[in-house]
Image (cartoon, rainbow, N blue to C red):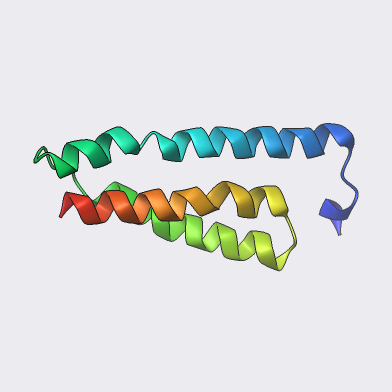
Length: 87
């Protein structure tokens, strides 16, 4: 399969993208704080992000693409928490 022959560059790129994804989902924290203080945001986007991340996590585990799997774990957690606190 094409993903089995990974160069060093691709490996580092995958983990750099994982770090970028972590940063993207950690950016939900200010919205969670706002939600908890009464300035509620719309729950649709973080809920959809959590569903998408769940699918990508499943894919990453299935094909043993660990950067993809790792990158989507915080998206599930922060997406769900953000959506729930927005309700």
